[in-house]
Image 1: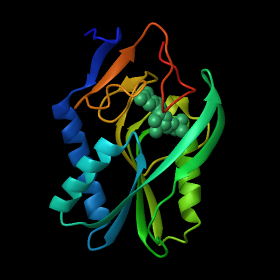
Image 2 (image 1 turned 90 degrees about the vertical axis):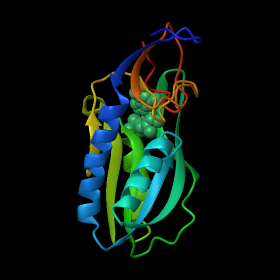
Image 3 (image 1 turned 30 degrees about the vertical axis):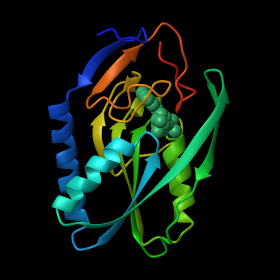
Length: 194
Ligand code: XMP
């Protein structure tokens, strides 16, 4: 499929499979946090859709939740990231002694989740688990494994379901692979689509 932005999008995970995978993930999380009040921290912006679906399904499984969001950003020039991740908006909750589930859209180099986990650990949490919609293990630079993974994907630049390319395609209800002539991604400066 070619669209108005001159990009070619190839579907990778359709809506039905996507929701089935997330449902299975929620079953595991609900079993693990049975009876606890779980503090869900979504990483903006990419995880907004995943987090929204996740918390609604957790609600249906009777998991009591407290929800907040954090924004972190990595900086770089052109297609090369400096590898440095910075806090843009911190959590506004007291997380001391709380069980926390940190949610992100995709685990790629591992820098973002490593930074965010390290930051949250400073709150002296009861526990910290991480949950990602996607894992791209072949891209890892910093060793990091998420506790809950929706789907493992190959080293392709993907958009949709919250993931963007220059702010576009976040609204897609499914996941697609994007191929563009030449451009840079907004959330992910060190990983330019071909
Ligand atoms: P790191 O490398 O820190 O990156 O694990 C996590 C962030 O990078 C973005 N990212 C992508 N965004 N399609 C996207 O739209 C991709 O294929 C992709 N790979 C990484 C994303 O924002 C994620 O939070």
